[in-house]
Image (cartoon, rainbow, N blue to C red; front, side, top):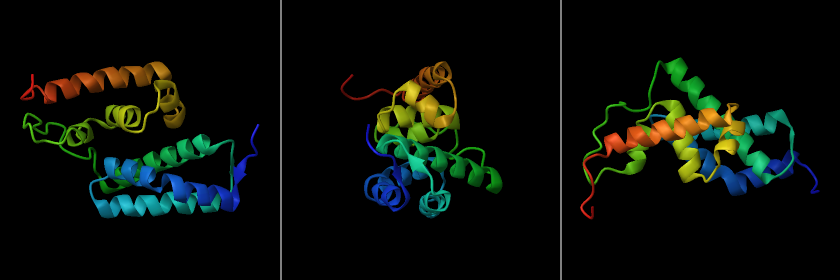
Length: 159
């Protein structure tokens, strides 16, 4: 078994390998890029302050994502933002970015879809990261896909 990762080594690995992931998750859960940048900085400050050890790089990455989601949730709650975007965003336009449609989903569905399809996590891993249950994550994924299907009902030219 590999040695645990802690201290300066954890920060160096996190900064080198996972800064983009933290920033993408923050962008996905905040309204402005400035908020996402602030959240990213706060996540790395928490990593320095906590001085904890991690079993592996994946454990470190999962911790970073969980802290990012929590900080975004706190920011949105404090600022009175219930949703990142209008949940009724029209996604029929063929030029609309699918990620924008994902971002318009309610928080639980949005994060499950994002972590699964964009970051490559399984439902079990998402449940561990978010502190939920695997079956709940599977429900979020299923319902999120249905919501996206309705939003994207305009179809595509090659269909």
